[in-house]
Image (tube, rainbow, N blue to C red; front, side, top):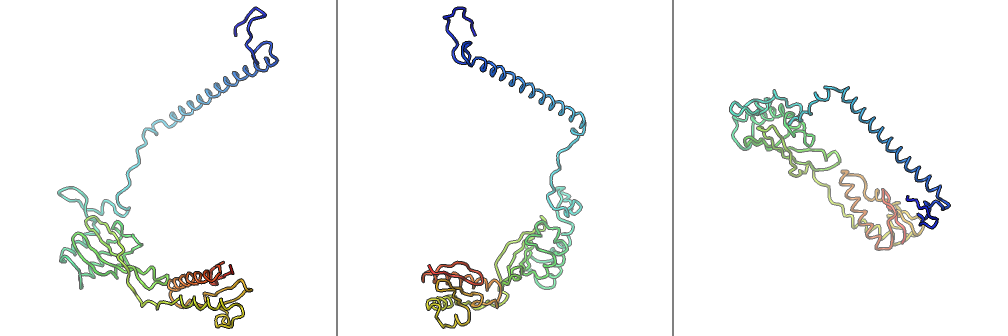
Length: 298
């Protein structure tokens, strides 16, 4: 800052004026700020230097080990069971073709005409297919196993594709009356297998469809008669009153568990929807629905 010898010279003004009451405070703050900034720069320099030293030490310790590291090898195209020894080499192109485990199956199929395969020859082909099934890429789709091939149907040969249909019974464990039909196509040249769902097959006759509308209508009529009603549903404990504004319906008794699981679940779902719609129209609101449906007056 310039110095003026005259007493009438212009002043800097504010806290930095030598005659201002805060001159000392402002000066100390300014000087302290400079020291803090300088200290921060020195600390940053030390940290950077330490980092450079540590990097250098790491490189010295690693030495040639870092340089010797090679990039990761690419993943194999097939599963681990498909090793190089499982292939044969084409003498013309030099490419590896046809799994060795597939060769017996191809030799057998060379004696079979194209189209549907029936009779005794199908048994031998199914056996040879089971021997190489685990070596086919995609053979484990839908948890398919070679032991299930004994029940395949519609075996057909259209070189190089062998196709068949098989029933899968996973849904029957949950009470379904139908089996899924899966269609498999096996390309023996590429050693691949692919599955596609084709439809369903009814294993046992379907249960007679339950008329849930008539049952829901009976329940609504019993509710409309009020707590003093002597109808059969009240006597049997199916319609239970809890005061005049709350009623319970035991749907587990109306639709008993006497059939397939999926069939019963579907019946009860349709009954709940129908009864809720009718009760809402009559001025009742559904509170909860498990084995017992609870309604309260709106």
